[in-house]
Image (cartoon, each protein chain N blue to C red):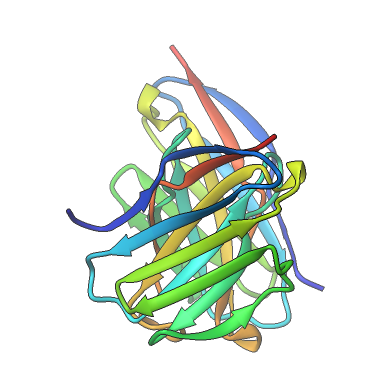
Amino acid sequence: GQNIDQPTEMTATEGAIVQINCTYQTSGFNGLFWYQQHAGEAPTFLSYNVLDGLEEKGRFSSFLSRSKGYSYLLLKELQMKDSASYLCAVRDPGNTDKLIFGTGTRLQVFP
Amino acid sequence: ETGVTQTPRHLVMGMTNKKSLKCEQHLGHNAMYWYKQSAKKPLELMFVYSLEERVENNSVPSRFSPECPNSSHLFLHLHTLQPEDSALYLCASSQEMAGVDNEQFFGPGTRLTVL
């Protein structure tokens, strides 16, 4: 079956580093996306990994291990505005390339 | 207007009402999507349109009826809904439905409450 797992909630302190993990089991794999969604707003694209390794983009980095079915999103120098939900999604080529989403991880950043 | 817009942003309706949700994308994309987002559940894909043709209906009850009159507009017609249909309904678009160009851009959603 299709399964994307990520923690439901996390908390962290301003200025700290936080790692949000995502594990997946899908019938196929054609890339993994991370989206950020602030309460009441649209999900916005953060990163895309299709090959193993780390992709860095400013304060945010995303890592992928296809053999382990595992990804993480790393947020550095946390700011209050980073409080949001972070959605992990896998693109499944065996399913018209549609995105299979996890439930999202709600991150709260405290001063 | 840029990106993906949705109207209304909030909607309260009774179980016997008929209403429609509207989505418009200004990105020149060929694929559009409807998702349902309920509390503590993953985003659920409802419908996919590619070049105005419906290519996926994810076992959605017939009380939800999509319409795509052109590649920029997508509607979701609602009738005789149930309270459990209360959720955030998100529209998204992508350049293509599949392949490397299917990064999806989301609208802000319509918060639907069914009484």
